[in-house]
Length: 347
Ligand code: SAM
Ligand code: SF4
Image (cartoon, rainbow, N blue to C red):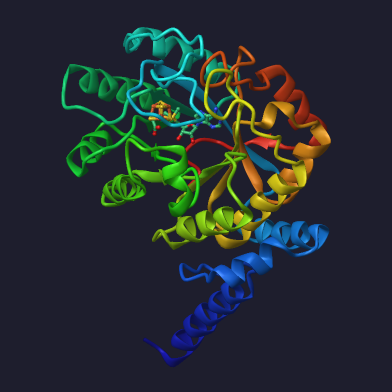
């Protein structure tokens, strides 16, 4: 290469290096608990400001991903997750339903697409995926919904590497598997599986090209230290989860957690802002619990780095027990705030 051309190329790559070094928000996997605690406890407006800078350096701040959750198999679950309306162990009034037919799912996905949704998340009240005709049906659903031009996410419980590869082959874009809380608090909430089981499934997904969606729930009775520990575990995943849902407990009558105190809004905001700073490129989702936030509170969450929401046509999200704002209310909110729907397959 001519010296002049080499000089030009080096100058260009140096400029790129400098630009990325100057971006706020380091891509790290080795955060110490002390560092995370210090970020989390920053005076609130300073924290939101710092998170907003990281957010703006790594994302288009005008874009919000709009997702639709479809419960493809509802209730009757063998697990004992203390928050869940679908566990067969609690009297929650949820009627168990078998796996939906593919056509029913395609119809819901079609309507969601018409309403401006960019990602469809298909959830099943299963402990784990089994290699049977039901899984074949889910693979078919993934293929057909992806062919409609929508990102598809599945949340089906525990998964082997071979099953993750089958989902990848069907075109799956993302797999959701939440860690929910810290490793030490986990056994207070769920006894029928371990934190290690959860991490193993995430690792199995990571071995494929399917992106990882993993987050937690606030309001289970955990301490601030549990939240900080959860964030450290999420940020230690290599690469970071592409999507991080921050749920607030929807208190379901009949579950052991039905009488938990409400999570104050500022605690939710701190969690969103800290997640944004620790995992700069992740899409941070405002999930369960959003229905009780005002538009002004949601606006603060978007400023602090949240850039994904679940929306629904029925004001219900996962089951009848979990409320959600509806498409019309959400479009009105996005218009008011000057936000637009992030297109599918952006990355
Ligand atoms: N059975 C699969 C599993 O547990 O991985 C997938 C479905 S499960 C309903 C998906 C996620 O929804 C859970 O991991 C949990 O984080 C969240 N979730 C369920 N019930 C909730 C509630 N009442 N409040 C907040 N989040 C909830
Ligand atoms: Fe079952 Fe998932 Fe609910 Fe736990 S969270 S009871 S695994 S559906």
